Image 1 (cartoon, chains in turn red, blue, orange):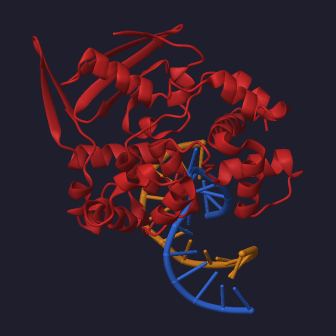
Image 2: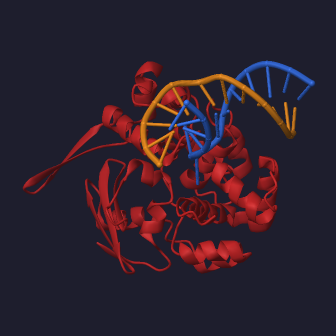
Image 3: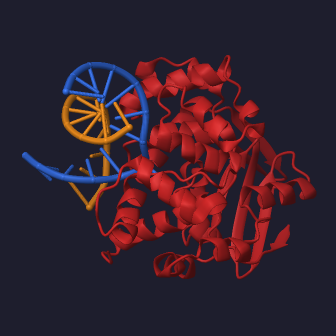
Length: 291
DNA sequence: ACCCAGGCGGGCG
DNA sequence: CGCCCGCATGGG
């Protein structure tokens, strides 16, 4: 199946530390990714404006089209978003450098687990821990593709994670987060229904998420942004804090609350997009020793 | 060896 | 409320 896209870069999208990067496998050149969704393995690769997509599992062509369109946020009007968030030279520079970077929309539970693991951690280790949890606790799927059999594993369910001991979760390198992982999995497989947050507004949903042990201000915002498409969420991590302080507060330290207030006032309903461009720009600038 | 990573919970003033 | 601390783990 082919999809014609506009203002979309799969490379910038999958390389910007969103959940799909933690549970999927990015292709060598970065222009594609293989990932699983609801028992289906999906392969997406971009050349120019064309996205070539295929799947192994029970997904019709229109189902695959819908999955890709939703997953990569392809319904968003990027011209409008760039207009709204392009408030100054720095963010315009980030937009120009990473044009086509989209906020992905992922499964709420998968997003939750990924970002509980992400705290006080680095991207490489997050990927490693998530992939080991999938290997250990994800259900195996087989798909007969003519002469070859495709094997892959689903993302582990809340129940599958909740069954494990803290010790066995730690054995995959989760560290002290193992306790949080188990607590959140127990909640999500019991009385806490992640689906009910879909219809709550941003503030209410955030408050509910933060009642779970291991989910604080930053992780809650990541879950709402990448798992629920609440584009006003502005996750404040060490990177974005540094970038915002440097660019908008003359390098002076600000409280997280101040940074939220600033982002809300400046970028409003698309603050999440502003955050993702500044985050990716800031991180890569550091790697390239630009800032 | 030292420092840091898409932070959080707990304790203190 | 703000501030400070400890927390597992592995890579630079």
